[in-house]
Image (cartoon, rainbow, N blue to C red; front, side):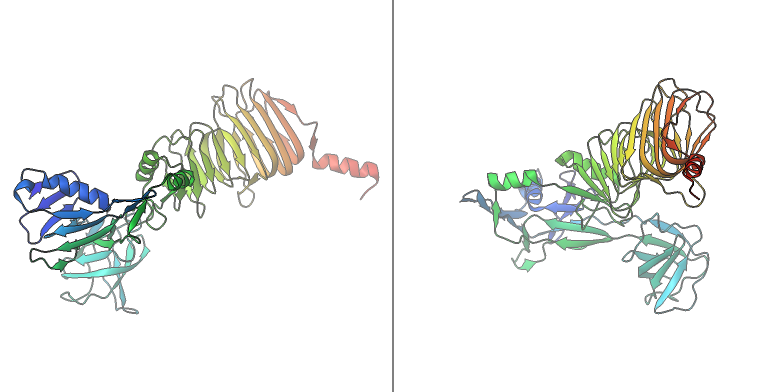
Length: 454
């Protein structure tokens, strides 16, 4: 076997011959396949062998249309490289009991099947029982529900049995029509299976490629998105049906193709600078800023946590424990300690409110290292505590629909304006406090008495 390119290894000695696609790939499109194998054919070994592939297509039909790509392997087949690395290996710590509904449990107190992204369709090998079977579900971190084995010695999972779990990777051959013949020549399958994978052989739905300025213009104006599901068993290609399972690959794809919309389906951690992106959460996933620069990005329907730099827009988000906050936030709720950037300019409006259950409340910190931060909270409902308003240029406006407001003793400088309807506790120690527009419960009682109301 000789290595041809980074993407493939060509086995000339098998019959039929085999083009092995490396682990780097989960998808191989028709044009890539043709170009890659032709380079193999042009190599030293390839020039002494019969052709590996014949291809046709892209003939001009006029009007910007071309014939679609069809390729035929010549006594050759494609095969993705085996996925042989287990995602969990361990020892049974509680022996299995009698099956229930055709399922038995595999228990290993030291395992974490959730983090390993084990799901239905993964499979487990019991090395001591010499059995292999597919997994039905993940019960919890340490427990799997599996189909009862039939190929083993005892077909059980006994105490101290050793096992390995393997996930299954979805793979795709697409972008055209793939066929193959052997040396006879007789028709054979263009692709063969490999361990730990399942293969989808995509067929072109039509015989033509349309390459017109009109189509290019439509494509250029489409709002394209990349999907991320960090709980997915395998890494896809960013499509809705096959999302990436990690942030890094998703952003690589987005940056390479000029895509600015990320659809996030599960909790995720930002691992690099992402400027001018729009991140949209499905099911309120938590996005951990992880100290990254997210300047000029927008976040919709997400929980936000961690330390950030830059200035962002947040809509319908939950602000959890966040540091370095800066930007504009609309219809967001507050849950933890929220620290504004040292020179931040933060505006919150459109029904900002506390999301802390019971008698607790969120805390807003103007940052102990402030160089003059600005904070405006418009139409807030719930309780809050303000801390660290300690720079002469710090400016805060707190406007309440109804709630409780406490100024902490760490508020030692700057200006704080409190407005609206709130129970007010002032423990500040040096800040200038403006409460001329504050309607406190005690003032309401005075007004009622003045008007003779009960």
